[in-house]
Image 1 (tube, rainbow, N blue to C red):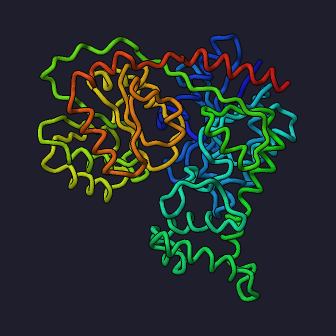
Image 2 (image 1 turned 90 degrees about the vertical axis):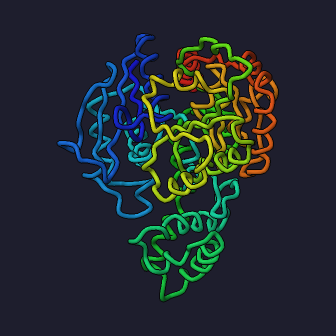
Image 3 (image 1 turned 135 degrees about the horizontal axis):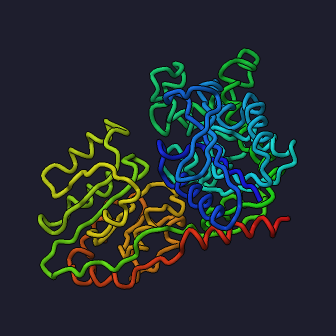
Length: 446
């Protein structure tokens, strides 16, 4: 059987969760005797490749890469459905002749891929790694920072999300730049939704932008339900979220597996200061500021905080974090190769994931548990599904510095108890087991 994995980007330039998941599936499918290929893309704005379609190998896996600089999107609609991608995707698929297409992310390829696989009669499956299928920002986070259930009937909540983000761009239209706060974004979205139906605005640029946003859920819904024969959801929560937004594709919740050194922690001595860690993107939705602010409330010398992540992603936010950390035992340690994950986690007594949004089975959480590193996470379903309070970690109220500070204080007050928690922390699921379970969905849907 030949399987083509379609992913939005891939190694070596991109190396986060979805890319790692795709690589793991490809390697274990190949080990099981199947032929595999990854079809990836270069993001619009990244350094261009030599041609529209290029090829290379990564860890023995053949990769086909489509350069989106050559097929750029020019409007919101083309970020989720770009007809200009159809001939490119069709040519790639006619050359590869896969028996199965397995999509791990549609960004860059867009839902035009699903039209092509239907046209060519290729059995198509997916892993829903985030909320792209029905959420404009992929995070289910409303414009005001609240958690969101999905698009409203009027789609004004989606419009407000777009306006809030777009207002930061120096290239935004004047009316978009007025959406400088969640309240103004919601107000402008509601007003625009009514105003665009007026004769003077209908079919104009404002109407076109808002129409692209409003039509997104239904466009994807029709293509998802029509093209996918089956799908993997890495958590029960994500499966329920897709079902609640009318995606009827048969889904199985299959937990991700991780390949990491599971050696026990080195025994700690009673006098050793607890090491608290953070690993991930340094961005507001990841809640890095919440952690530093909560940590700063601990008694001096009670613990140390190691923060791993790219410092150049958001310079303004990074400067804010450095200000919060000043005078406290906080070390910004930059990024590291994924192969060093076990080494980085080894000295940590606690990993904190303070995200403000619905994290969905983040690999750093699973890696922490697998290396016997207890966790303290925001109480959102995409993470608490893996939590056994008092056995492998605890949760705190999402977005609450007060509750996070209290939980941290309780844990570092008794280092011996925190060290003991490591002995009951584990995660045994491997990529091989995950791959076998994923292969099974093709036969179930056949």
